[in-house]
Length: 88
Image (cartoon, rainbow, N blue to C red; front, side):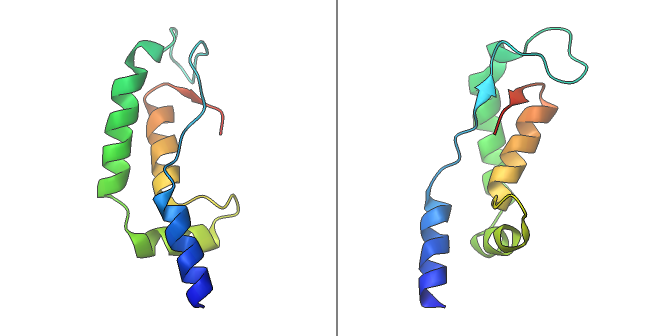
C-alpha cells in the first residue's frame, strides 16, 4: 500500500503536457485558436490546480479507464472548451 501511495505521489508530481494541434480547428470554431494557446494553458492549469486535490487525483486515477488524474482531465476539457484541438 505504501508503494502504491508513493507511485501515486510521483505521478502527481509530473506535470501534464497537453499535445495541441495548433493549426487545427476544434468544434464549432471557424478559425484556429492557437494565438491564445499560452494564455489558455496557463489559465487551464490554474483552474485545474484550484479544483483538484491529491486524494481526489488518486481516486479519479484509480477509476479512470484512461489512467488520467482529475487535474489532467480538467486541463484537457478546459483547453477543448477554449477551442483547442487536444491530441492526448
